[in-house]
Length: 214
Ligand code: G3P
Image (cartoon, rainbow, N blue to C red; front, top):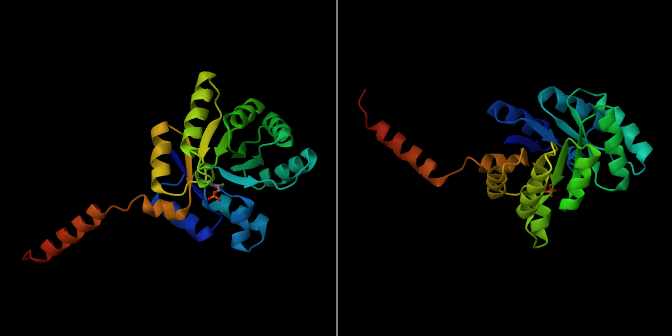
């Protein structure tokens, strides 16, 4: 499973790259707003830190305006992927961008039918938001399983990015299902490593090591 960081924070992205486990980045308008800096230069900087796919979301509503934004963002760097919301306009945008070989990540996916239509329109990725489904007492990971099954039924090559991940269990479940990508907040990345027995084990080894005469 590829691991993307779900952040627009340059310091987190640099740290993630140092750890050697990050394959890409997803951003959204809320994550960009948190950084309080100019949008295009920020995206440019992110694309230089992360060699893998960098998802950048369009914010216009009409098809033509979304395509214009997409072309502007795609011109920033070769690794930019255009994030498009799932709706009728979004489908048309995905179809056009796919015919121009611009990669897309169809976002705000909350149903199998949305994912299937996005894939048929030519999406490179679909992003089901598991945490937001769990937030309203649904089962986000069940949606991921269903999308994976339906894509498998028809040999669709659109990849699933499990998004809105809130904790390590989401990450592990995504891997068990065989999702292509999990996009995780930086805090989850550090939580993935934590285990009390590892911490205790290290402490005991170091204590015993102090008794060794050199
Ligand atoms: O990038 C989209 C997604 O991961 C958002 O997550 O936590 O705002 O639901 P969250």
